[in-house]
Length: 223
Image (cartoon, rainbow, N blue to C red; front, side, top):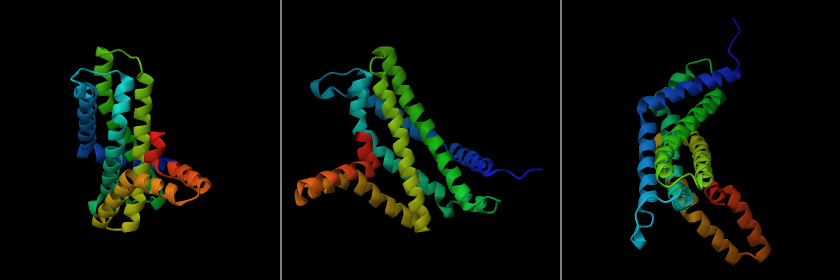
């Protein structure tokens, strides 16, 4: 009997990770949170001018962007720390199998990526169905692009959290580190770029702003 290939082993780890995630039911919780938030934003987005009712896909997408970029990085990193922490027990179980560390990391990342994608599609899909049934499909492309970027941002921050968890070795330290990283990348990064633009000559400031734009997944998604 032939030994499993590297890709087959990675897929086996991916299936294992998905089973664990679905058993913990955080996908349903994550999807429910998304569904509630997106529905509330779409329905009450114009409440400040005393108008309620579902907005179209384009206006809903614009209203949701900043909310998504605050919540998704933190949620995806917290979930990744839980997954990659050796104190959880499941990672140690994988180390006992004939699988390399690299295959474990890739498999777990793929599993988390699929789980995040499932939760995102379920959450946004619920609100999308309500919008389509009441307002129509105009602007749906913008909504679909937002969903795609949400999945990519979640994958980027899950990967970052996985790396930090592996380096931190302990989950308590990893949780502290990712909270700092989230605060810096989501809240302080733009302020730092603006500060540099005042301190540096114009040419250097423009290059620093351009580099910073693509170094931070949050800013890249905004573009």
